[in-house]
Image (cartoon, rainbow, N blue to C red; front, side, top):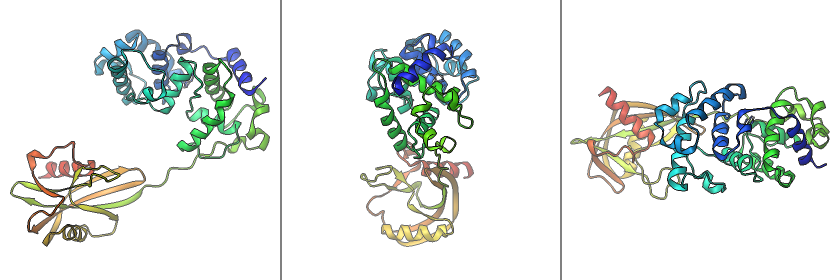
Length: 348
Ligand code: ADE
């Protein structure tokens, strides 16, 4: 028997009786997989049943008020998932006539559906060969293929999925995908893997290399670097000075922001602001004290933004605009600048 056949045979003989396995449809799969993303099977099981009583199909969920969906999510936590699910249901009704698509790209275009949920729906509900890789399946696969890549990285997850593909037995894609989930939950556990009971121990690379307890490899997240973002606060007759980010900027093209730049903590914000405003083409720049401060975090950076009041002489150079306070479109400013505007409003 092949690895895939062994796994499926084991699963069919020892799977737990769980409510979403009794009524498999694309909709029940979507709901249960989203619920199971950050919550344990024991907590999800009863709540999945009541949720389905309340919203038996995708149309019922799409038609529901957000507050009702969030109320029905009670006890599961991470309520953003409930809102995302409802928005996804609305999109399916509006864009796919209420039929959850099986196509990967179509699924990924839905709000709240990422690579894991898309693969889970495709494999478990449509029986397509698309092993769904969450943290538990990544652990199982990393051990099976003795792969010491960082399981937190998308590259490793894609490689593991590619390793799994050829093992999906013909016509058994759903059972294969769920068997991996079950193996991770019952036997191939993080700390005390029960290799003696494992149906695929003889195929396991980590068992052969003696690395079961060393795999999977998880790199600790990179420490966020502290950054000072110094911004000029230049008011003139009820207007505030903004610069427009270049339309070809890789980050936030065309967005408006207060003039300034990032630099290492330790620089003096007024000095940086003067340098930036002079660089933009203003002459006669005077900087004064900070008027607003805000904090903001993005990948690998912890940003402290400081807005410093400044007077400038001369007209606004290219790319800079004075915009009246009440005409600043909050959708067009960067999050960092929006936070500074709000901080200023709160203290002014
Ligand atoms: N965790 C995520 N998906 C699951 C499933 N289908 N069955 C059991 N646990 C799961």
